Amino acid sequence: MFSGNTVDTTRVWGEDIFSVMLNAFQMVYPGFPNAIVPWKPNAIIIVPVEQFPFAFTASSLVHDPNKAPIMLVPDRLTEEIKNEMLRLSPEGRKVPAQVLMVGPVSSFVEQEIRSLGFSTIRIGNQNPYRTSMEVAQFRLTYPSASEQGRKNIFLISGETFSESMFVPNYAMHQGIPVLLTEKGRIPSPIQQFFQRHPDMNVYIVGSERTIDAAVEGSVKRMTGGKVTRLTGSSSFDMAVQFSEFFDPETGIGWNRNKKGQGDAFSFVNRKDWQLAIISGLFSHLGKHAPLLITRRKELPDEVKNYLRYLRPAMKRPPQPPFMHGFVFGTFDSIAYETQIEIEEIIIFPPGH
Image (tube, rainbow, N blue to C red; front, side):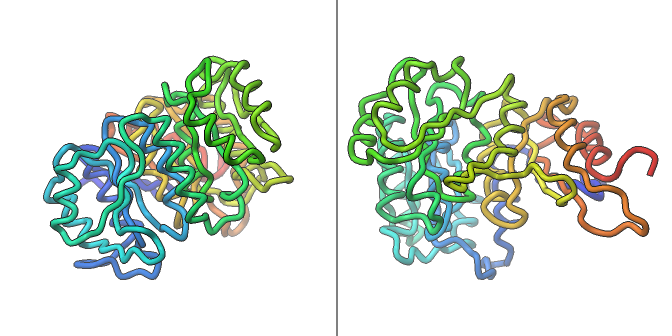
């Protein structure tokens, strides 16, 4: 028997994306044969497993009052996914349906969901930009329990996830709508959204490698709210800076920049956007952990330095606060040696 855990890290296992997802659900919403915790889901979000834009833009819908985890699904539901939907049994209070299907979810999957006894609603279509506009509009129509989610927007690339895969975690945490853009131009559905909501504060996440200066200039002309770009020297650095960021005017930001607080973080390989989406449940509930990005075989220096800075000082006798890490996927995603490296960095300074 091999646990795959350490005293200060928990690995969320699974032989594939779907089993990791189901394990995460069962950790966050415990109970068998039914989830019995007071925070059980009110709805479930269904998105295609192969296309990141739909999952990323759906992330704001996770936050209250929807309380709706994202399920990544194939073209046909597996028996395990069906059983998990039944275990969760969302009630759909004060929302249009128990299951929110975002993007090009197949009609066959919709029929399967209805055969389980759940009501459904479709948001968006095969166009990711149109879908992100409709999801943002839905989020504002059924407003977030967080004031942040009613006045602020994230704008990220709809073409690559390399510089924004940590954004959905915060969107799940506070219900901030996530809009998508092309690198060199703002798609017409997104322009329409700004015309309808001309005073939103906009946080552009990513460097000019993924969203160029012309788009930023266009956003500034379209909104009367403040426009802020969040960037960094690499995807690893961007995740760290995003975790540190806080805007005192709007309250946006994890604000994880104080030493010795005993912070918890999720860790995902920079190539595994599906695991990043799954980790978002640990941002929505529990320890409300921001997401940090890593390589498979070693922690990037940017992440190491950040964790060392945050690590609580040693006390005699040892007592809280202590840090914790959630590691997602198999050893093919994040090696066991990397997990041990996380353990060593967050536990105590060397020599103790």
